[in-house]
Image (cartoon, rainbow, N blue to C red; front, top):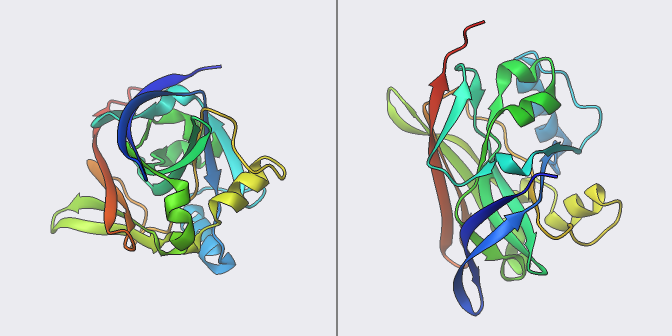
Length: 231
C-alpha cells in the first residue's frame, strides 16, 4: 500500500500546530449531493463530455495516496484535465480534520474509465486543516469556491455551500457501511459542485473553503504544466 507524508497546519481550540502526517489511503467520493436535482445536473454536464453515469450514488473511488500533493504546480498529460473544488476530511491522530482540495481529473480518460481518470492526475490539497468539532455546530454554513483565469481575468468557476452535499458523518457511514470514523491515515475528497458555464481546462486552479461563522478561510491553488501527447 502506498503512503505519503505531508506537512500541514492543524488548527484547533488550542491553537495552530505544524506537523508532518502520513496519508496511507486516499478516497474520492463522487455524487455526494444532498439534492437529487443538483446531482443530476452534474451527471448531465459530464454526460455532455461523454462520461457515463455512475453505477451508484454516492460512489467511492480509491486512488494511490501518492497522488496527494501540496505542490504549487502539477503536471498533466494533454490539455483535457481540469480541477474540482471539494472539502476533504482527514483522519489522523485519532481526530477528524477538515480541509480543502481539488480532484483534478483527466476529462478525456473520464469518458471511457472514471476510475482510471481519477488515478491519472495529482490531487492537490491546501496546507491547513481545521478540527472538525469546531465546524460541526455550523457545518452547513461552510462555503466552497474555485477560480480560474480567463481572457476577462480571474473568474468564479464553482461556488456552493457544503449544505448541498452529504455531511461528513453520512459520507463516512456510507463508505464504511455504518462506521463512525475513517481508518487512521485516510484522506477523503467529499464531492463537488457543477461548474459555472461548463467544465473547461485552465492553466491555473485556485480554491477555498470559508467558515463565515468563525471568520476564516483555507485557500490553495496550483498551476498546471501540460505534458505533450505523442501518440
